[in-house]
Length: 296
Image 1: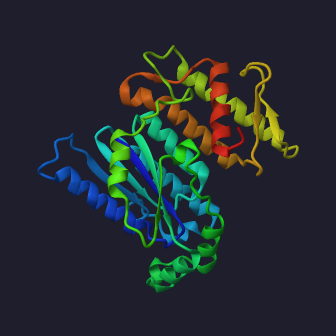
Image 2 (image 1 turned 180 degrees about the vertical axis):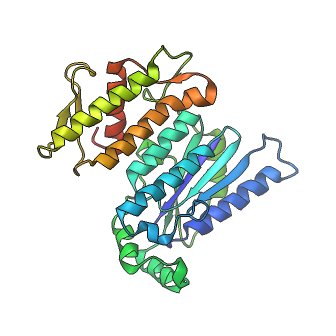
């Protein structure tokens, strides 16, 4: 039914708000006078995914931690469930990936930003037991790197900004996930009734060709754009690159995520996802990468 992403500074009260929302939704669904369909309320957080505070100390440990959260959240997305993802969720690209997964699953999305000033977060952080605290450098880094949700972009909308000293607008959130717009999958994850023969081979071959060519191109230095080879792409297709230099591990991870969105509909509903000719796969892969990197 819905994916609700909770975001905010570390120690801003995200888990408190997530628990409040889960309790409200469960009570609402279990109320004797509730006449609507029944939903499971699933809370996915760092503890449930065995993600420790130290996982955020550096990128090598943070990436698999985010992958574990992403996997747990997407597995819980069903028409009869409300999934609340309680974690830092401070990276725009990660929230976009969650949005794509929700669209593929056919569920609504909502974002809750728990707003608290950094000094208040630092005060709460210092009061925690040692085993529940970040290192001081990690805490400061998470605040500095925080990418605030924006109600003007589709993957953060509808956005509910809740101050640390305000009541949770639970009724408004309930209304949004029950009656709000349910966006269909975009072209990169759109379903077909039946896949042509050899579709998976076309998918993996095309993405592998693009990734290999891109990494070879980057070995000669960073550039703002990369012309996609033709074949597999149509002539003139260009990938706009991010400000950082994509690494092999990053490209492999994004390649797997894109392929998962393409094949996910086939696994879940018997149909195939997306467009399967080499030029179509190449164009969709470029769109996916540019959305993740926000270079489109």
